[in-house]
Length: 186
Image 1 (tube, rainbow, N blue to C red):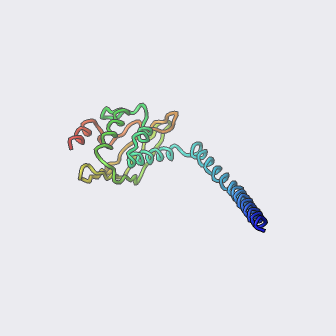
Image 2: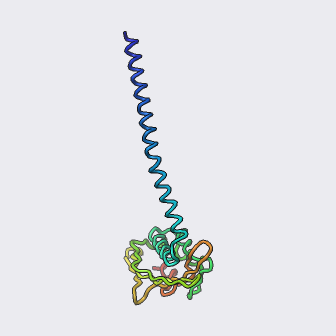
């Protein structure tokens, strides 16, 4: 009798396992259309953004990406926003921006950065973005605020490269090596 009970329990257990395996398979099959739909939505959104966004919208994306890179103190992402031909009125080049960002991120911590308004004009392969917003950052124990507003916006000059729109110059914001030296001494 004990053997019969053991066999029945064993069979019941196996049937239970088959049922749960069938349930898992059924759930997987029901998830397949959802995963497929999500993948399709992702691919379509990438294609739309790549082929159908206006140059103005793409430039605004670069501005947001740049602000995000500063907030996260991500030099690699920040430098991807800049043209290899970057040159501004202070004589800075792309490598200078990278070095100054590195010093800034070591010395200060960004508390908040917000882009409030970005007005973009594009003519051919050249674009211009007037950016208004602010950045609050801490330097030692002092909280400081940099503000770009209607009276004094930051002007970003863009050029279109093979890899997209990149910042070719920054005007209306003093970024130079002397500022970074003062920051180190602060």
